[in-house]
Structure formats: structure tokens, C-alpha cells
Image (cartoon, rainbow, N blue to C red; front, side, top):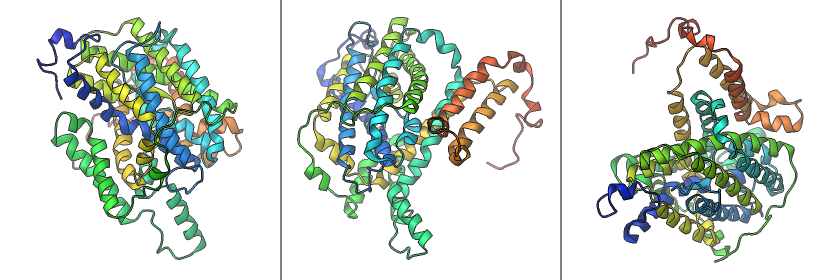
Length: 483
């Protein structure tokens, strides 16, 4: 759906306070929901799976996953309203769509891995305190942007994607419970005929989702193209249902209507969670600044004001804080919706407010979450392979703005080597104290820390030196491989 004369004049479409006719505003609002829906609920599914009460776990705590999905929708809508409507200094009063953040997943997984629902109290401690710290950053966010040039932000986004791609492959192959079952069977030297992890059926379903998503994305336009991942999941879901892979047991058990439950997972003080979330809030705040700037440039053709940037950061943090109080995960601005505004040319915050109301409505009906939880893990795997791969691609795109001189190559090389290395080999930190081990094995925090510190302390003199010295004289040369 693109902008046209029936929506309003060009000047009106660039005005955040303009409201298009409802006949167009409602579909545009739904379009924003479709663009972010899958990405919004996926982090809850990943964290529940890492903790051990997610897909395929047969855990008695599985209803907590449905609750987390429900809260992901509800508080994404609430946080979005903070941005579009605002109150006092909180909110940019721009068409910013908020949703559950992927950026915090590499931090959250080590905190909950294999610990069940009992670990969620400590996680919520991090969400709540991290949200407060994130809001506090709004007071001086403009003054710290210098510490996060494209070299640093691009590296961080790339590391986030690299931390997640493993999850996508595991889901496509059949999920963690199936993987554990296979490993146990192999270790016991038993019969592998009943094992499903990595089966051709699982991969066939996942690849079907990938193919359909790509076909819809590149061979259709408008709302279909925007919702390509969602449509790919729906097609995969239908095929999986026809193959007997879908169960509606949890849909039947779920309540029709339910209110959010304060401190659903309790609250457990955790130093590791607090440090991890506060450090990641710093990165997330700067990403929000980029999204606000992208919206004002793409939708209104102007730079974002200091008040808009500050208000957006306040809303980010307070939205995350409130989410944590009710058992939801951190919220942040969604970049895919920034691109959608540039594509439609509609800057109206009323349109995004309508989308937020749809999210809030869905959040009060647990059966919506139960239906989502009935999606086979292999189907979801196909979708997240695309999404997580796009996170890596977004990071590489940001890195394309970097001047690859000797200094920047050294910073990138050391940061990604240490960060990715610790992520791939966590036992290298076997004797490190528990809190530090949780933070370091995420890979993301050590990589970000090294990149920020090295960028601040290494002399700029290195920038004038040729990269040919560190690339063996081969910079800019062909690899000798046929394309």
C-alpha cells in the first residue's frame, strides 16, 4: 500500500499529526502490525525454549510460554502508544512502532539456559532495572553517540545476528528437545530410527517457509511483500497441519480472556542480569536514535529534534520497565517499521496508534498466544532463519559505511575474534566466577566493550596507514575464485 492522493496532500502525509481517512488509516495500521508481528513474539519463544519450558519440552510450565507471547503483544502495543501519543517528556510523538528486542537475546540465554521457569525471576530483575537505566540515558543520549560510530554499532548488530543464527538452524532441524534426544541416543549407542532431529521432513518444512517468504517478498508488492515472513509461516503451518504435525491441545486449554499478572515470574536480584541489561540498554538506546532519525528523514524529510530523540529514549526505557513488571521482555523501536514508513510515505502517528490498539487487543486474549504456540518449531525455524540472517546482513550494511583503514581493521579483528570465540567455546571460561562467565559467554558484551574502548583509545594516526600492510598487500585484489 503506497501513498496516493486519497490519503492526503504531500504536506499532510509528512505531518505526524495528520490523520488520514479511517478507510485507509486502519489498513495502514494493520500493515504495521503484520510487519512486526513475528519478530515481536519470537524472542519470548526463544527464551522459553532456552529455559526449558518452550516448544517440545513437555514441561508443565509450558503455559508460561503462552503468557509470555500474550504479554509480548500487549506491552508492545502499550510502549507504542507511549511513543505515538506520549505524556509529558515521554514519547517522541512520532509513528514509532515498539516491539520485543532481539538485541538482548544473547544476554538473556546464558541467564536462563536449562534453568526452567525459576530463572525468569532473575531475568525480570534485569529487564526492570535495565529499563530504568535505559530511561535515564534519555537525559544525555545525544552526548554519548560519539562513542558508537558505525564501526561499533555495525559490529554489535552483526554479533547479535551471529548469536542467533544457531537458534534458527536448531529450530529448523526440530528444536532443542529433539536435539537432546538424538545426542542421548547416540551416546547410548541405541537405535536412532525414532529420532526426528535433522530429518528430511523437518528440513523440508523449514525450507518451504524460506522459499515462500522469498517468493512473496520479491514477487509481490504492498502489504503482501511487507508481511512476507508471516505469509511464509502461514503456508508452512498449513502444510504441517496436513502432515499431522500441529496440535491444538493448548488452544483448547487457553482462556478466552485474561488480564496481565504483576510480577508473574517473581523478582530475584541478579548482578549478572543487571549489568548485562544495563550495558545492552546503552547499545539499544543508540539504535533507537537511529530509528528516530530514519523516520524523520524518510517520512518528513528533516532531522529529528533533540526533544524527539530524548522522548523516544524515555519511552523505550519506561516501556521496558513496565514490561518487566508483568513478565514481558525488553521493548525497543522496530527498524522494519521505519522502512515501512519510508515505503508508504505516510508519517501519521494516528496510523501507528491504530496498529498499537490491535496489539493491545490481541494481548488480552490468551487463545491468540495459544494459536501461535501451536506453530511447529520447524515452521518457525524457516522464518527465523530469514529474520536472523537479515540481522547479520543489517550489521554488514552498517559496516559498509566504515573506512577500512589499518586502525579500524585492528579494532574489528580483535573485537569479533574475542566475542565470537568466547561464544563458540564457553568452556574457555570454566574457572571464571559465575556472574562474569554469564556476561562474557554471551560474546556480544565483550565484543561491544572491546570495540568501544579500542575506538576511544587507539590513536587516529593509524587511520592514515594503508590496509595493504595488514592484508598481505592483497587489499582490493581479486581472490582468484570464480563467481
